[in-house]
Length: 211
View 1 (cartoon, rainbow, N blue to C red):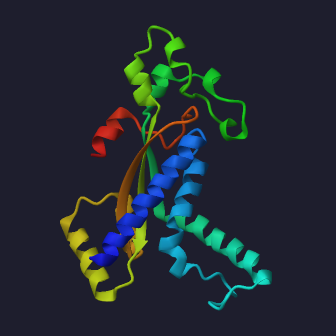
View 2: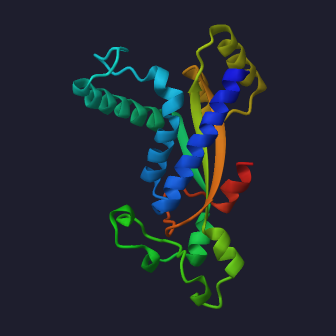
View 3: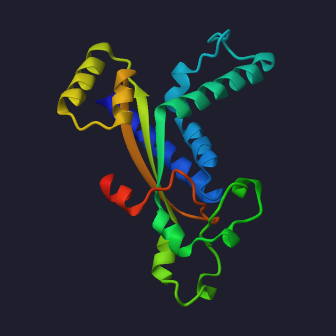
């Protein structure tokens, strides 16, 4: 139980870092993933053993090579074993308040088709509901991550129990088949930059179905 609690606490912290990175970079999914990777370093450190490396003390000449290979492992881990959804703002919020004109002319917004403004709220059209648009500039990120299970007997018991209970999502089935425990965490932060529409943004109906 202690290991499960530690894993959940680490994931909560990593999810907060992911949401914070998103709030500073327009809810860009790449930035959110980078924040998540940074938060997962403590959880993944026992498994960061790049090919050709040893567990001895890092020297100045091998340090950059080791960290470069470790970074690639973290990238693969997040790509293969996570599912990230933006629960707020929803697609309906972008339909109501979003526009292409609100997207800054920066690299992070190069593929953005719609953004929700976060500044000059009092100067927005009277048709805007001030409470709703303020709510739409809250970034709510949900992360599902497959935590590696390392204790042989307990790992099998957890996997069998979850399979017998049923109601598993395709992601959860995939993680259990890889001997990983699917965990979920949600973080909420205020946007500091205009959020942009992306494939990770859910609809109101998808949001209702996820709870």
